[in-house]
Amino acid sequence: MNCEGQRFGHNFPYAGAQCIQCGISQDELSAVPPARPQIQPRPKRVQETFLKETAEKMFEYYGGKESFGLFSGMIKRKGIEWGRTQLMLMMEYPRKNNGKKRPIQFFMLDAKKS
Ligand SMILES: [Zn+2]
Image (cartoon, rainbow, N blue to C red; front, side, top):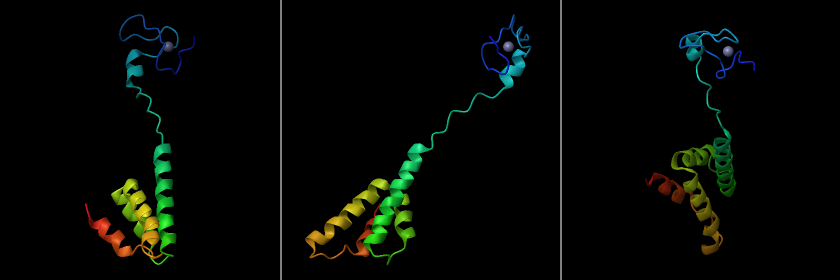
């Protein structure tokens, strides 16, 4: 078994000794930083995509009259759940209000609420 360059699997005859197989000293080995845990960027990226999609739908809803940054910034601050709720309210609004779109002021007011 080749233990050279490995973190485990060395053969130290006594504490502080050198590995009889590859020659690394135990002190040297313990100085090696432990392997970094694998970073998993996936969930964050999925969230970002979701956020962008939601903001885009809002942007389109208002026909580009409001800035995309307003929606994406607000959703980022208030959370994706909040954003989804807002989008749902926007989509439902016309059905109950003779096809009128939900005024942007409502969005702004909700954004101010904690
Ligand atoms: Zn070794």
